[in-house]
Image 1 (tube, rainbow over the protein chains, first blue to last red):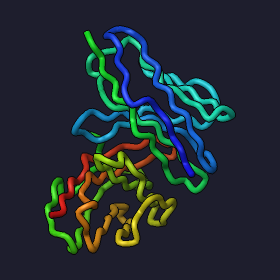
Image 2: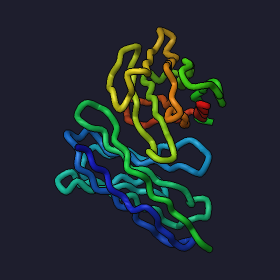
Image 3: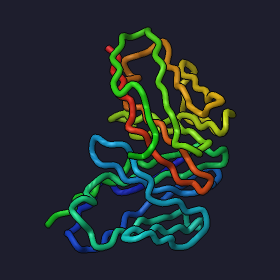
Length: 109
Length: 111
């Protein structure tokens, strides 16, 4: 079966750096995606990794290691508006998406 | 505003009924994805279309079907509705680079 694991909840301080980990076991791999979702809103695409390494986009970076089945999302200079749920998803061999249950991040002053 | 539109915003119906959800992708995007989000099951991928053809299929029930029309808008048809089908249904349009843009969603309530 497909398995995507990420922590359920995390808390971090405004201005700090937080790393949200995601491990996966899927039949086939065609990319790993990170999304942000504020309560009551639609998800917003953050990043897409298909090759190993770090992809940086402003305050957000995403890392992938395919051999370890591991990714992380790094958020720098945390702001209160970063409080949201962060979803990790893997696109499998048949191009279907498998989602983790999401990590609820709370940023405190 | 993502540029993706979904109608209706809310839908309330009864068990056993059939409904159609509509999605218009961003101008220029050929891919449309459908997702279901419920409180107990999180976000689940249903199906993807690319330029009118089915590209990938996820956890989509046999009671559900979708299609993408020549003008690239897509419809998700849900039939023989059950209480458990109550959820948020999101559509997203995608670029060749993998980026996805989500619509605001349709909240379906089955009574």
